[in-house]
Length: 188
Length: 153
Image 1 (tube, helix red, strand yellow):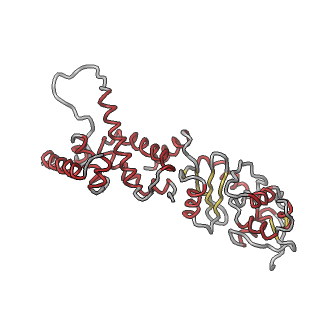
Image 2: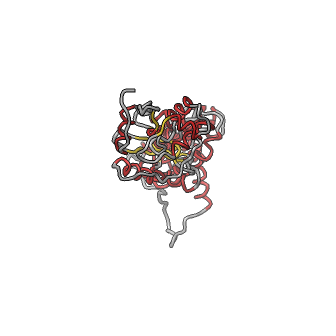
């Protein structure tokens, strides 16, 4: 059955019917779920998120044509492996931003420009999105980031350097900052 | 809300393949399987009723099996030499012989038996898949089983 399903996914891709391809990937923090549309990477699910729920959300918000089809995600998986080994600083993948809108999208685009190993405050992200006072909204944009790691919301900290929050849990945020050699202040 | 298409594959692909093996034989079932799920994937976002996705898939599989038989009927197999007498089996017999015997049934009986015992569909859904009345579906199934009993005795 495995060969039949692989052939089906290949033909679906060839005939333009593969609206959402997904695959899982290992990470030092647990298993990730990767999903891409023909436009680019649309979702990275973190280890503490339920893959079934993530797939249902993609079916509802993008297209129900969701298939397990690892080839479309091979390049991203290779980049992630290198990133976790500390050997890659910039992801070179097209992104599909359709799961975030308006202010959130602008905030996340500004997050995407934070260089490797550096950090910014939620206020700076709010400013980057065009509204310096929308600090809380910047925080919730980071909290709802559909493409974490690749869009590095882990590089966003509180103004005093405290960790703030992270969708994947604070140990993961610390781990990612450690990989990048970035500094933060614990305990706030 | 429609579930991710992969969930349909996980839940029903083995069964669809089994039904197709009964309907067109082991060798051609693979192609019909691909055609079935590609057609399903193409139509999937547009379907209005997601309550009986299994019946929907089996209906598509049934149509693909019919298409397959029609195409074969129109296109006689080329042979180098016409045999003087005798008939040959179009499919190699399955291990237990049962599905091979099913494959020899007339199309309507074969479909009814495949959907009932391969797909475990109730009579009303078989009728919907075949485009006939429930009573007619019941009759086809009954005739098919009677014939199988005779064949396998």
